[in-house]
Length: 211
Length: 213
Ligand SMILES: Nc1ncnc2c1ncn2[C@@H]1O[C@H](COP(=O)(O)OP(=O)(O)OP(=O)(O)O)[C@@H](O)[C@H]1O
Ligand SMILES: [Mg+2]
Image 1: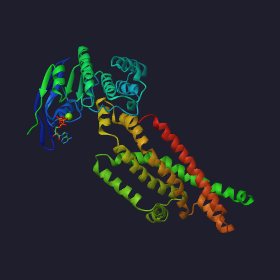
Image 2: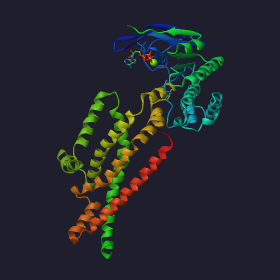
Image 3: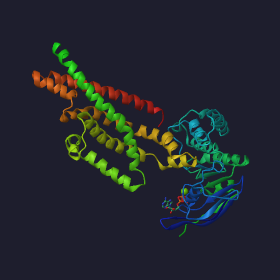
Image 4: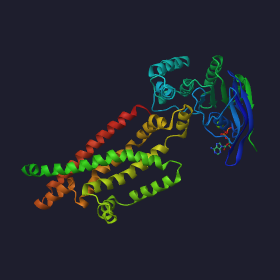
């Protein structure tokens, strides 16, 4: 369970997030919606530790923690970026096993076995040895999801997972997110696509721009 | 033909000097260039400031002048190099600046998102640099580094100014002594051979890095 209490974020003195409170229960999906510039991405970046907050606190399973400095490998927060940010110099498989071997210190064989199983589950079975440039947008996104999952995150965050995809691929992302939910993954999804948000959400948070 | 075989030994020994300057400069300047290039993009302003002045000095004045300063100027300040070390020192200073500038550009071409996705995967800065950033930077900078490498082959001829016996000087000596252009023709051919080998090696390297985009 992730809780945010009074999270405040400013850029150059301008308040973007003002006292945000929210709770995401284990295995649930929270969607964050709101107009452009409202601070959805900023909120996600605070949760994933890419931005320092100016106030408030985070609790993970009741324990206070600071995403920006936390190095505990049992409290990883996975992120699927809007533009995926796969590593272009590494194959799909290498993208996935890099962190498990270097950070979690898994053996190459274990990491590979797990990676291949995860790739299989997201229909990427035959793609392990391809480079990112050889993949379609949807495939890249699924690799990004697998790469995040391989770190056994407590929570998986997505920024605009449908924006870089063809409309007909929207269903596919939706199915993946719901499938991961059935497997118990806690997820936060930022989107401006309200129907999409409504169809996957257990809970919706609306952020509004501060004048 | 007889004449060629007569002067060839001295040209070959000159080539040895040229190659020695070339290799040592390359081997030391490339890693240094990476480090200095990293220094140029750190958030520690005093460091970037100092480096920028250094790079500006090295790129803003002729290498020939730098050679003269190192060999004839530094002794005034009590720093004495022998001819060879002075040449190497000046070349390394100069080429490190050029390489640093190239690596800075390469480093800045890597999207912030690459660092961020490495960070959320909990990779350390060093792991990120080694596994993600450097391989991408190397691919980006290879063509520009290649240009500098070719330049270095030819620039090495500047060491004549402090009296080192390189290839060009060997040709020059023979030309003055025998009053013929033949030695210089040979010198040209040898430079062409050297740069051809470099070009070939660089093409190979670029090919090696072409398996991803
Ligand atoms: N690094 C930054 N420095 C300064 N201001 C920033 C920075 N990042 C975001 N902002 C500002 O914060 C506000 C919220 O930006 P954010 O990207 O979170 O919006 P968003 O809700 O994700 O919008 P969109 O739907 O367009 O993606 C914007 O006004 C933006 O200009
Ligand atoms: Mg956004």
